Length: 123
Image (cartoon, rainbow, N blue to C red; front, side, top):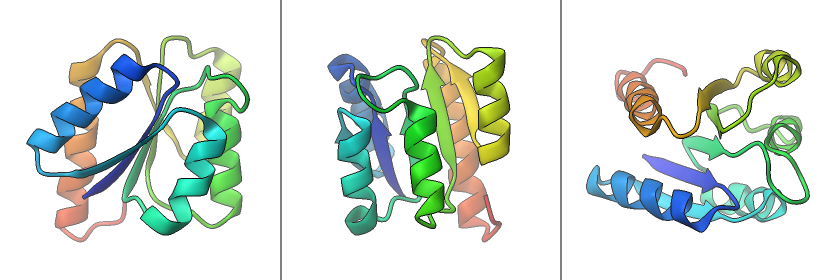
């Protein structure tokens, strides 16, 4: 399973990378939305974890761009603040929200996506 972690916080990227490496997943990271947009075409992630509040592009901006470019895989927005407006944007984009710092919830969601993918179900 290939996962792209997009977060401007180095510690978050490192924690998630270590946790997913243990699971045997291939992980790439990006510190900004623009970096993520550049990585996706070549890396072709099975799943993307995005922070919302980053310098430059917000997570929902990145997701909207990637959806417009044809990325149809699951996206999880992992953020410390998810307003009602952002929740509406997420629903329109088919994105799952998870509040920071609930790392356990994030890992459960990632495993659920992986399990569904292994079973051959669309996620």
